[in-house]
Length: 118
Image (cartoon, rainbow, N blue to C red; front, side):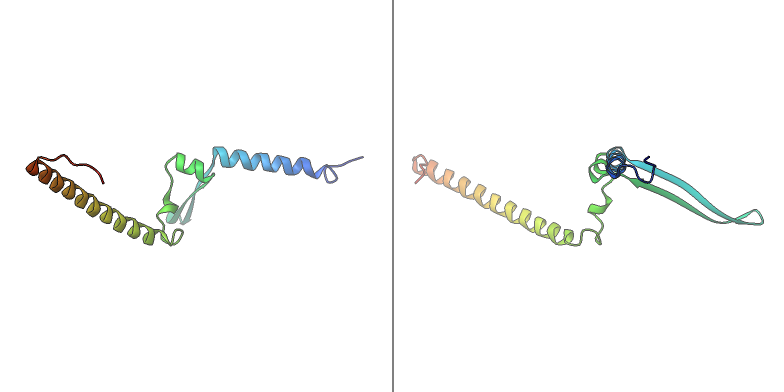
């Protein structure tokens, strides 16, 4: 006769996987306060907030602090700096192209010729 200890291991694993999937999908919040008092004088209060969810769910509700933590995203500063430099180069190139097209337009109007691509 099977007992709880000899039951099917797959059933237990499937239940755990289902529970974990549901917790990560929906999220789980545990909140509590710990207060240390001596002779009815509060000496210390510790507020504990624990949230367990998937990264997708966290981003959906507006939590993305790990993206900006320099210890969790060490290469991020370098990428941001490189992105800024590339944007500046792009703006410089756009200004050059705009000035070249304005200069070419003035020359074609002065000579009476239309611009034709080579």
